[in-house]
Image (cartoon, rainbow, N blue to C red; front, side, top):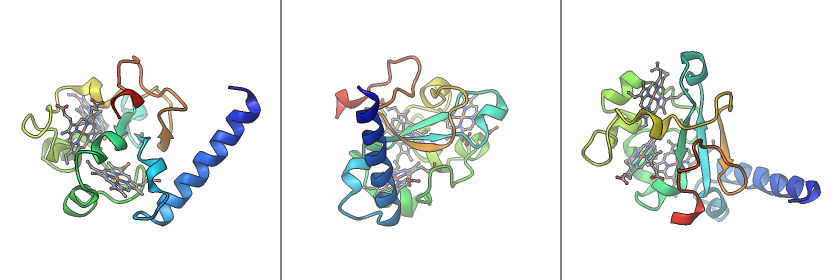
Length: 142
Ligand code: HEC
Ligand code: HEC
Ligand code: HEC
């Protein structure tokens, strides 16, 4: 991608994220379904890779309400003060990643797959590769 195109793609992405944040149920949300959320409030400091939450992957399986109402996830990247005690206690990711609804918590690397040093953000998985190694399925599974 030429630098100019890349800058335009990033600008478009930024606009999409702003639109999504302001109007969670709004028409622009389709774009952001493909964004991965990187969560790195504590990971770097604790010496683990940042957590990557593939929003689109979950969104096609569950209604918004399941997570943002029933499980109490706030609509803000990094806005939930998630830690492993809470997850093991069945909160947040742990409501499903318990070996029952989804694979369990001992699969550290499946969640902690971000590049070290990546700040908390919503990221467009088809524009930038976040996960390492590259086995995390990107747009392919859509
Ligand atoms: C289902 C996804 C998931 C799995 C599996 C998972 N984590 Fe986490 N973990 C998270 C999220 C999300 C956070 C919050 C990240 C942040 O804000 O930096 C987190 C935070 C952490 C933190 C920093 C906060 C704290 O609790 O100390 C450590 C350390 C950590 N995880 C280690 C692990 C280890 C070790 C494993 C495997 C035994 C593991 N995680 C498995 C999602 C997961
Ligand atoms: C499986 C759970 C799950 C489902 C289903 C889900 N989300 Fe999310 N959503 C999350 C998580 C986790 C985050 C990141 C929160 C964090 O980083 O602490 C998030 C973040 C967001 C954000 C904030 C992004 C930003 O810019 O900070 C918005 C807006 C959002 N979701 C909207 C939706 C909408 C609209 C739907 C349904 C179409 C939906 N979500 C479905 C779990 C889910
Ligand atoms: C409402 C239930 C639910 C919640 C909450 C949830 N997950 Fe998941 N997650 C699933 C299911 C179901 C799968 C698919 C499991 C499978 O394929 O066996 C999955 C798969 C994943 C995958 C693998 C995606 C892929 O491409 O195969 C990752 C990574 C992941 N979750 C991370 C997280 C993190 C991080 C959180 C918390 C921020 C979280 N999940 C919260 C249900 C959930």
